[in-house]
Image 1 (spheres, rainbow, N blue to C red):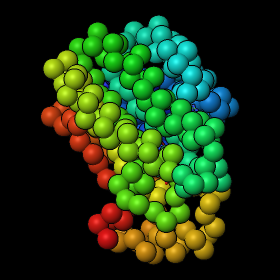
Image 2: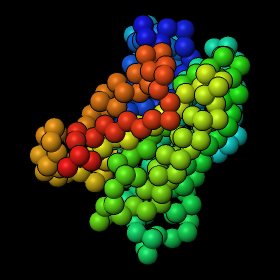
Image 3: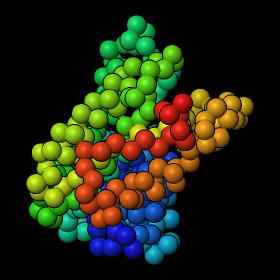
Image 4: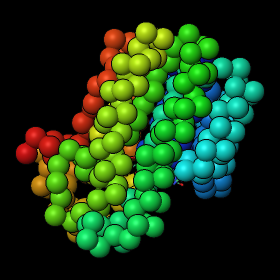
Length: 252
Ligand SMILES: NC(=O)c1ccc[n+]([C@@H]2O[C@H](COP(=O)([O-])OP(=O)(O)OC[C@H]3O[C@@H](n4cnc5c(N)ncnc54)[C@H](O)[C@@H]3O)[C@@H](O)[C@H]2O)c1
């Protein structure tokens, strides 16, 4: 019960790493606010949590819309009385639209920024005052190995949004450390979720997995385990840090 009595908002909690973390956090005692654009997926996550005996609240909304994120924070506090953990997990990787700067339209650039960068801005803007009221808390941002290395198949808006989160991570850590609020960022490598599914044939998955030191793609649990550590008091002296969880990709 590493998150006993904690209340967490997890964005993008309907699928992938967000669902995995929601279920894991609830197993560890947290009450989980499952926020997602895909309400049916969010309901499924909540049903898994409740079947396991945990507590969940579904809030449907878009992280790129400030009013939706503000409502999520308000509903979380109204239902569970406080807020301790903000996990800004929702993100999109649209390789068909988000390409190199010389190919991307302004519209596509902006929407990718709105989801991947403004989403965490809105969550922390409205969530941090609640963490302050609770006497502290943990913020988890999600970057990417895309922000740490150049790739010949570019997704420049995604890369820039994830890179900007590295700066936000340090800024929030420094600003709010004195309030006992920590902020850390996880950089996943290639993880086998719905986000990557449109771009990965079984052959491609195997080839990429084989190219990594750990000889496989990541699974959602690999990232959720790290998020659990960052959410829990076990990481209580860790802030402004970056965790690369990539099967060794960046080391090669
Ligand atoms: N999968 C990877 O290989 C990989 C690698 C590096 C970083 N990441 C990052 O990890 C995070 C989670 O990725 P994943 O692979 O679990 O993704 P996923 O596509 O499997 O799940 C993402 C969830 O976010 C929700 N979502 C999307 N846009 C939203 C919005 N505007 N508002 C609210 N919810 C929204 C989706 O409905 C979905 O439930 C993302 O930030 C992603 O950029 C993923």
